[in-house]
Image (cartoon, rainbow over the protein chains, first blue to last red):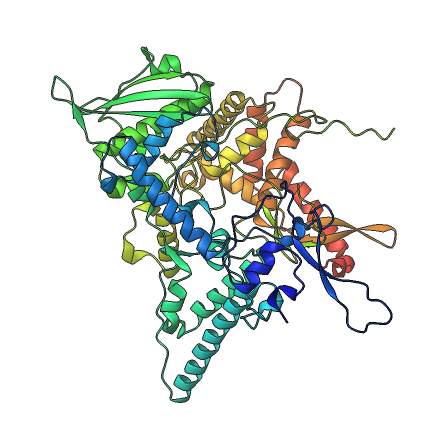
Length: 399
Length: 237
């Protein structure tokens, strides 16, 4: 039988099954004229059905676009895109008058922003020219061979990567348990080596989805993490360290993320440090001077006049009292916006940030753990329709 | 609020989550994400050296180094004068958000207690001077402790009838009930012209000596619980 005589429903799918490179994925708007081979109704006398070539339009042979699933890109398509990208990069380099050899991605971005200026707010909607691997998300290649048989033995579960991962991990777990049994049979006591749990975290659900190229449900994800945790908890769990490292990530200590400014010196030679703070709508700027006597000036006015309430003054002194530097610094603040308590909170944050420059790293970490260096994100909750306030509902009336 | 079919409320660190048979459902949301930990304001705890800490504390310290920390609330400081129980009591006394008034009332109450105790101290003979407690904070804590009920009652409906079933109370609930009783007692059962600080100081001193209306209320509750002992098996938690 000729190859063409095989019934083929649509152009692209047939091509993909044969492994041949497909053309650029056709948009459904353009009418196609696929070749459809239909067995002609035979006359009662002839036995074999004669296959004739019949041309039809896509209106009759409409493909169910939604049921086909997400668009799949073949390897050849991606390769071609990469070649085009590299060529285009060199052309762009030439156009901009730069050396095409040393034209980096940053230069490309600047050139595109110059040539195609856009006022769109969403950065992803603006014109961009990036490497195809960044634009086309990594999709799964076709999972079945020419005969239609799937490659993986778990294909028909629907989530083959997830179940194969669970299968593998469980195999590791059983190995560890076997090893443990062997050790206990020989009367070896297991050494408790704890993995540094706070210093590392498991992959998030998004990261695991990216790794497996498959959608996961919350339940699936939590089961996988439970399995990993179970393995870590076992005495000889660290045998499979390498395997588990694939699924864990290091977390850097919080302290290292912040850059502390060095001290500045004014004309008199006194060290000072400036910082800003905010709380609700209040914004404060603070200058903390060394060799002081504990004087605080707010908006040109003494603190006792500006903050008559004791609680606010306590908040202002909180960072100094925490570091035992109550009468060693002078402070000049400017604050605007917000209410009484918000302004006090803003100045507190600003002064704590300014004091970081005067103090050792260990004390900065203490301040952070006391909650002095975090911006308070709490805001007034909006009133909802159908309710009297943010949370209070209207009085319930029986009739 | 999210609806969930059936749920078990598990009191753990993350109190805002109900665990259903399948997944976590968020009930109340906060401006901080789940990673944030509570701040520790007490300076002495922070200055402990590494070797003095126990295993759990070491693990906690390691975790704190990696996680972000929430901002300290505005009624909390590291000074010796800020007391969490007094802050809680002040907040409960507060009406319409008037924290300034509530705080001044609290300060006047403590001052009144101190004055009364000092008067007693100066009038007492030498050998009894040691027994008179003059620190108003100590008196406050002791009085509150004396007012806390040990067991409470819960209404449970079975077969149409509602029974008062004796139930153990959590620490938070005990403290709340003690403070609530104190405040309601002082608001309602006083002469029109007596001010709140005066009445409160009277009640606190009485409670410190295990006398007074609130202690009586506590004993009444205990007696009710004792008399309803037969229904204790209705409790399923």
